[in-house]
Length: 460
Ligand SMILES: [Zn+2]
Image (cartoon, rainbow, N blue to C red; front, side, top):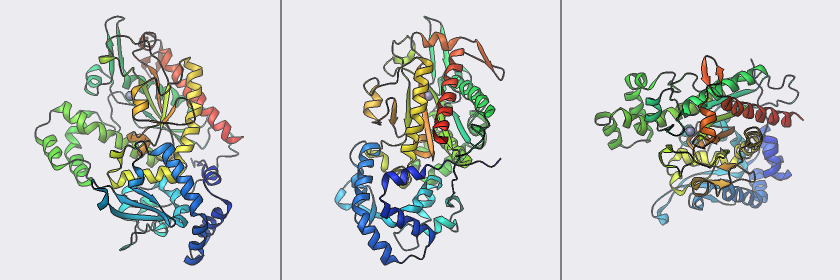
């Protein structure tokens, strides 16, 4: 089935550019031979407003520690990118994106950051090469993908691709303890495995969405199966050593860490220090390869101040995350800096906030649990940035950073809440032979209605 992509670029351009700049980008797109002098003069005219728009956006959604200006410098010509140095007087220039080149940076949404950072640059030049990205001649991953509109779609979700990521992977207590994602209480007797709750939610939601014509991709669809389609033991036997080498080659782990994991680490250490992150990267890779119109990441939350979650908490909230909120330490790799630029120069954050608004509203209404304020959890104050929507926060998580396009990272309900732990423990609902609770079905229904309402709003 041929899927149609949502055009959200239109609103973005209206938001961030003047009419004059639109004319420049259009002409640049239609005719690559536009004279450099003409482009230069246009970009000079508009650089002040672009600097103002992107500076404001950076402060609002992306720059948690107010340090990004040391790396991204907005000049009359464009955005200069520097490599972070401990001694700021010695910072090294990396590359520049000229203002009159950012029209094709929409494609950042579907480009491989590594490729952009290393390959798509003209040889011997610090200028990113838009032409190479456009025709994909230099790196096939970066071929520009044209999105068409989903206006006029007959069935509500026909031609719409939705990626669902059921958080974590445990389907038994041993695996849940290994990934530290379980709630176990004596009073009341409760045993909850987050990976089971998220999988059941995703399977129920998948059925509902497919009934409306959507094409749905799950990053994992069996208990205890990782996003690689195999369990941890099989992964360790077959993929571990290869993955270790590539992670080291990418610069993701140090030589010492590689040696430790290879020779000394036990199964649980390998799981926590390496496998979990590899699994997240694989989820992001699968989602981006699917090119979904919408991505929903499904998690169930806990009260972070309730140690070990062995007793009940009175707190219960819903919240959702989108990309952004980079801490100063989170811009150290070239890939992170490219992801920062993607989130700055595309409307992925704005569109994700809009989608997440429908999702949080539906969660609150359906579960009767309020949206969290930033005063309700320590990490919301310390790691997140507020958006204009209650319960929607910018947060630099692996998936909100790596998944391109529109994403809602849902953290529904506190599993250790005194009422929720009982409701979620019940086995009064079945999906694909898996026993779960009606409470889980309510969360799936909330997400379903959120997606339907969002799509309806786009088709008006
Ligand atoms: Zn989780």
